[in-house]
Length: 295
Image 1 (cartoon, rainbow, N blue to C red):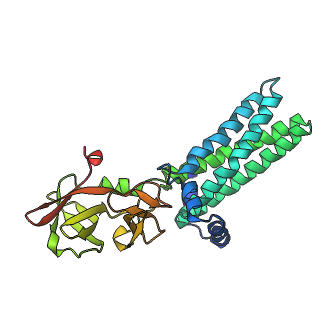
Image 2: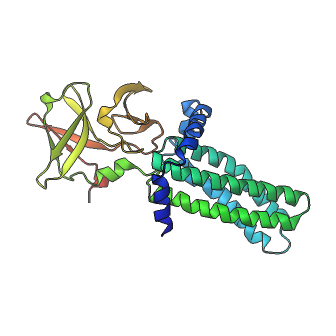
Image 3: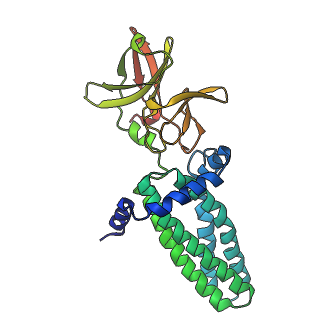
């Protein structure tokens, strides 16, 4: 059985759910206000913060392991171990913020990822204490054990990102299935004013296109009807105003997007919603993907 298959089975099991629920509730209580959680998600950066931050402790600990294999670098290795420990704390907070807003399968695999990372961190703390007390041999052994655990956990993190699509933009993925031609969404006057609605149109290639349409008078905005976070239906969300902009709130996890350009006003989403170009031709609303999605 492959590692991927084993992790998929883990994602399907309910055995961890009883322990996950109270931890998730605790994380959501602690990571307040929303601005703090948005910062940890990476809303300001435009992509998840946790994977970027994880490079620091892993890089520091790997470098410490290389120096431990060479004579005469005790101080440098100890400094790198301490750097990795310090960087692991905010990295874990960013990971916890993302994990608390993920789907159930991602939470199960992510819980194992977190436990392994926590064990690796404990080993490195023990390594640092041993080194400071002059016990270099024990410090090196604990560090190599921690490096092995952290490396295995990083592999699970890769599975979360690339196999389970944690942190990936579901809006961009959905946009690839949308027709690249102008899509006829029917008479503009037939659309309700000031209310997001779902329109599923088909072009000449018979490609179904789920879109969220919001009309204001003689103008309309059209978005791919998929939240970039986990694929929630945007047309079912409510309209709010954030920072003077009209925004649409995903009904699943509360990700909030500016209707005009799809930019993220509030997380957990970090990638923007996909907004289409629009035009009105002979009283009919038409929409087309932005150029970056067209071959």
